[in-house]
Image (cartoon, rainbow over the protein chains, first blue to last red):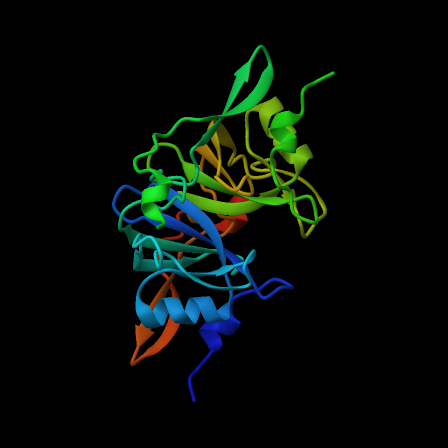
Length: 132
Length: 132
């Protein structure tokens, strides 16, 4: 029987989830934040590519399954509270479904004291070409 | 009356929270993940240093208030789903209450096929010296 101490050490929330941050292992750019459960983490370890839990679809989300934009795991880190992970990854293609490298492309700006969000990162690929 | 479109654009969860990732603006190291609500984000903007919502204490958490380890905001990014933020910061001192630079100091390792977590980042300051 497998030792699950390392999984039990994680403080899964009331839905059995924790956030996982995907960071480019080379550029250190933060690519995305998604959610994982035990199954997603086990599957990530088993296949060597990032697997998340899609809260909207209620099922495992093998990142890149449709787009080919897989994230090869280089390192996995857990924080001091045991309730958040970092996946250090080698990103094939683009992390974001909008065709941008990172999902964090909206920057907080101000105009006359009024804050607003502006998309500041370029679309590198047309989303319609990513998902056929 | 202030325009709150930028705040309303954020998809706060059922508790009125979203995760915020603090990243070192210079080294791009991920320092920590914490939670914010509207009040914490407004206060972050008002004072220019990272403010979070402490879920355990149920109140605003002005990072560095006790330790002096403040995080000066350089840039704020929102992701494509509008439900996660990145604070790009200039970190004074150490982000982690354990006396390490980053909270993500536990690395997933394997020994004979058995995964385990190992603390791999040095303690740079004794926690008892950080919090007096």
